[in-house]
Length: 78
Image 1 (cartoon, rainbow, N blue to C red):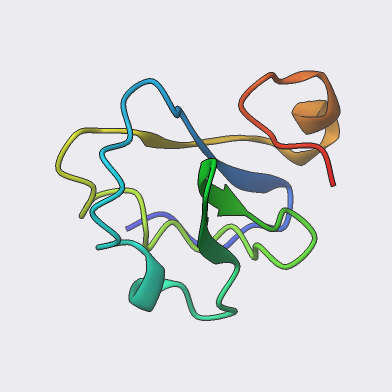
Image 2: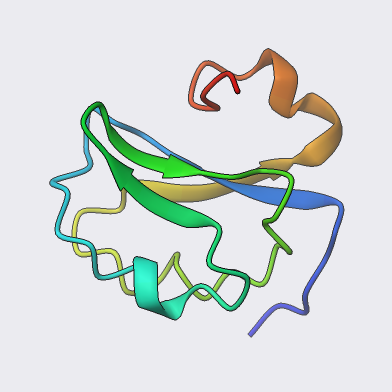
């Protein structure tokens, strides 16, 4: 398993996400929440541990570089 890196942050592809919620209890800092608009990842709280990635049954979660997350459409605006 890759090591924790603060250089990366988890993002959700809302086109793929089926809102099953399997990832939410796996997140150590509780950075994942379900909202009306779908799954939301608090990128400020995400530690980059990747524990949410593999359990996703539809592959909706992935990691991106934290430095580029402001330019990624998968990152919800605060």
